[in-house]
Amino acid sequence: MSTTTPRRAQDAPGGGAPRGGAGAPPARRPRRAGSALPGTDRAFWILVGPFFAGLAVFSVLPILWSAYLSFTEARGSLTPVRFVGVDNYLRFLTDQAFIQSLVTFGVFAVFIVPVTMACSLGLALLLHELPAAQALLRSVFFIPLACSYVVASLIWKLGLFSGLPSGVANTALSAVGLEPISTWLAQSPYWWVVLVTVRLWLQVGFYMLLFLAGLQRIPKTMYEAAAIDGLSAGPRRFFSMTWPQLRPTVAAVLLLLLVAAFQAFDEFINLLPKNPDTRPPLVYLYQVALGGDRDFGLGSAGSLILTAIMVVVALGQNYFFGFAAAEDRTKRRSRRARRTGTPS
Image 1 (cartoon, rainbow, N blue to C red):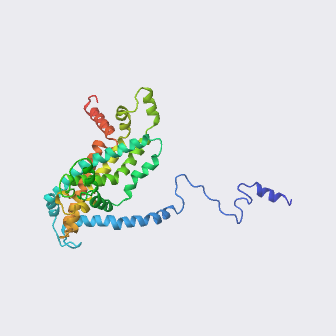
Image 2 (tube, helix red, strand yellow; image 1 turned 45 degrees about the vertical axis):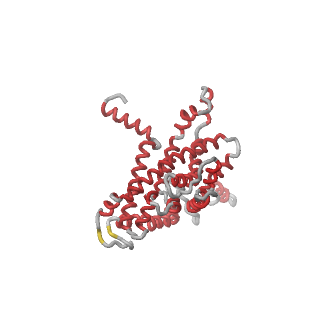
Image 3 (cartoon, rainbow, N blue to C red; image 1 turned 135 degrees about the vertical axis):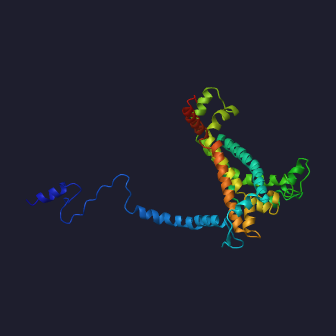
């Protein structure tokens, strides 16, 4: 009789003591699939709460206050003086200086967007085919992105395009038998060369990496099958296979380049600070809101107008060149054909 009780305790499921016995810990209920662990919600808010608080204090509230200021007169102070309705919006939309800044943006975008896209795609294609030193060259082209726009602008202004005969650009022109140019930053179209090259040097490495990632996700079996069918490397293979596969990457790069062109500020204000013909919208807004007049009401209205223009441009770009534009157009044609009863 003395050995019967311990043997029954060992046979009990889960270990030594039988369940339900006096002093035994309560058995845990199995957690249902998909249910959160105890304390997960509290840990989530402890970790994410400061981020939401900072976002509300430093982003949401200033945007709401700026929207309120846009309907008021506020000069030299963030406290509104009187309600003016939509007068600030009407003044900004009829302001010739603001319209000129949009023209400046358009010219700058026409130069910088296709040039950056072509250079970054060309570099990505060259690096993608390299058998060695690919990682080294990726780093070499990406390093300029770590440089400040202000520092790069000073290098371009004082070293490359200084206008002196000893400047790098004029030395290169003299080497090929051309006359040196002393008005790089004072005459069109020379200043566009300076503005486009400095931004191209700074950002081409970043977009090259995006295109390189897009090229690496194309299956090699497609190229092998094309080679068996007689489609060798060359322009024909690029436009029939590589370019369609890069469509999502091209759409993303185009959108990022347009947004970056809208946000152009540092190189313009450091290279051409007092030239109204080379003043993009962001520089003009800065001068209206934080310049001599410090017209915060008018500047707030202008910032909201510029935001609306950027949203319209982004939506238009996504409609025509977006990630699934072709599929969306096919679906729309199919729905229209079903409604009208005509073949799609």
